[in-house]
Amino acid sequence: MLPASLFHQTEFAGHGKASETICDALRKAILADSLRAGQALPQSELAAGFGVSIIPVREALKHLEAEGLVTFQPNRGAMVMGLDAADILEYSQIRALLEEQAARDAVANLTRVDLAHIEDAYEAFVEGTRNPDTTRPSGALNRAFHNAIYAAARKPRLLEMIDDLHNRLDRYIRGHLVLDGRKTVTDAEHLAILEACRARDADLAARLTREHILEAAHISADVFRKKNSLDQAS
Image (cartoon, rainbow, N blue to C red; front, side, top):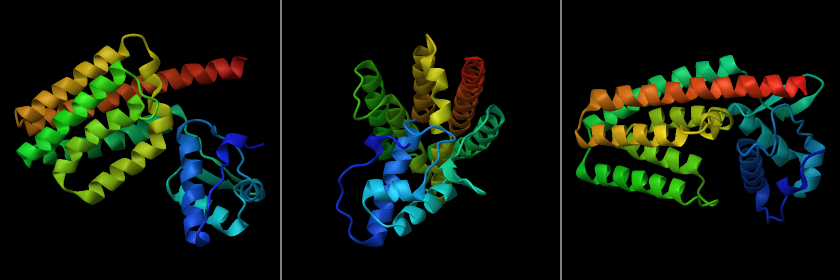
């Protein structure tokens, strides 16, 4: 049974619009863990809940399959895609390589306007984590800080690949944030990256970015393993 909170009253204007709206709703629910890994996504139930035909539902699910958030299983239909610890680490290693390159290219091409945008994003992250705002959670503010740096690389296809990996991993890489003292470490790492940008040190910014991603990934994978062990034991 799908959660009732997934569905809401929406005016759909044609199959394209309906498909996009359903896709957005499912994506948000998956990334927020409202729909957990392994959750079945019956097309008929989704169609009834959203008040549409099967066609836009199928289109939305196919789009989410391409994003790595949904999988289609023989004789079982669509379900929320799940990762294991090895998947998390492998995707994170790829992400670290891409973001390392994006940071290096960004700092090498950094303008004063770019730096101002990065500083604004950093201040927003610090303020947002000091005074939490549910409309812009810390994960979104964290992503905005890194994206403000990568935007200066002016390589849209590289950023698309980074965003795709982030969408696949976001549910899993938040695990390190629940640990005591981790926020202080994250703040210090962000500040170090910002200082490297200010110094126009592309190699340092790239190295710090790679280390920042991989450290968080390893901690999150450990949190994920422990949580799975507890779930299986209960």
